[in-house]
Structure formats: C-alpha cells, structure tokens
Length: 126
Image 1 (cartoon, rainbow, N blue to C red):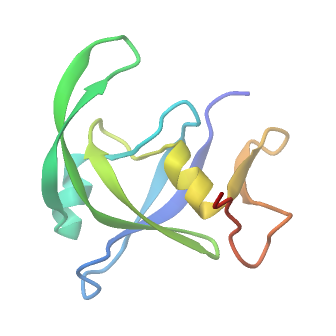
Image 2: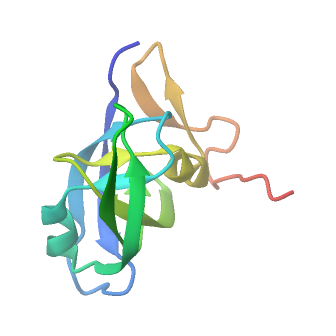
C-alpha cells in the first residue's frame, strides 16, 4: 500500500491564543502514540509532562519527552492527546486515529472520515 501522509493541525489545548501548526503527518497504524518533532512542540509551547521509554522499530529503546495537551484537527474532527517528542516528522498513531474516528482508504491511499459517522465522531465506550 505504501506510506500515507495527511494534513492535520496541531495546537496547544491550554494556549488557544497560539496559532495552530499545519503539518503533513505520517499515518502509522502500527504505532500507538502520536509523535512530533521538537520544533513543533517548541512552536506550540507544549509542556513536558514526563519522560517515557519507547521501543523503536529496530528494537532499540530510548527515553523521550512526553508533552501535552496536544489538540489534533483533521477535517471536521478534533481529539486531545499527549505526544512523544521523537523523529523529524509528525506521526499519527492508532490512539489518535481511533479518537478521530478515521479510516485509511487503501484504494485512494489517504486518510478519510469514517463514512458510517460522517458528521460526528463515533467511539466504542464499552
């Protein structure tokens, strides 16, 4: 299927006066967490909440900052989450994808709103 990128906006949920940052984020269903580069966290004034130990795709572990609260916007959807400061590009993990109620369209090679709930995000709460 290849790599899928999508446009999202990131903003600091505690500082609505700061302008959101629009980025092209890699969609990664194999990752749980959202990851952002350090320069985005600095632009948004996100606070480091704690350190997290993460295991990378190559099996190595490292300690990285965990920041928040991050608001993610995609089309008519919003979600709130924390993010790992890691890498040189934004990455949307499975937690944010579930919260946004979005799907990957393999034919179109893009992220789409769940067609079963086009106007209001749906979630399973049981």
